[in-house]
Length: 377
View (cartoon, rainbow, N blue to C red):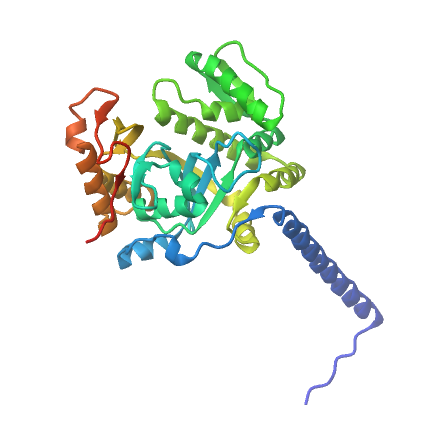
């Protein structure tokens, strides 16, 4: 039986000081947790989307195992011409943020808003209509079913959220081309009208530090060479610059951004999920961005100006290679069926579009406006 060690008065005092310091640290961490939790509670929270409504395709065991190593989040930017209306609207920004859980590398893929896809209800039309017809649930289901993904979480923002975040970061540095000047000023004006912010204009091409309203206007520019392809590049440029500035900013500024922007966000992610992502935020590295489809053809399908994937199956293979480093990916039966339907409707394959220089072809649809399909294998 051991003997009890008797501490001296000095040792007892030292131990009390150490215990007190530990208690203070624990209290500070608890207070910080409550502080962050309260801020996160400002976010408009959506209920978790039931698994059966996510339209995750029957994926191979290998694909499921690969996807476990990544966190894929859908990001929607809504063009509602109003603030805080995040339940519906055309999602003129559709992005997939794919986080490699082992390396913390992040890749961003912009899905062109005009991409001709099954929008989630068995009807083919432009991708940005999915959110307007069925909110984030239908938009996420569209991405999962059409691209063989397993996205469960989304974040939706509007003009004001982007504008305010950029302003709090002190602006973003963007090079404006000559053909963009007039369009930038026009979109800046309309963005200011929606957000209630001041509109500042530029007079010539050059490199500028754009404020929030200008940066949002820049991301909306569409009517130049490259059309929607170029617009998604602009959107990703703004995001890249915001990430760069955020990683260099101080805690007080980040606190202000959280305070302001949290009120302009809608998501179905829980506070615990957001906190787990936030814990690694400063370690994340945005390594690359790309647009989807990788290969496509601009065409008028019925009454719609659309971006037709050529073909969808090949594009999905390339997407999985790009995001997940998977060679020789085998698409699901659903994607194969969608791909056949798009080819049958538009007549475009990868081989056929390589010989056609016409930027916008007229192609028919079964009913003149949109097509319907229920793919079964």
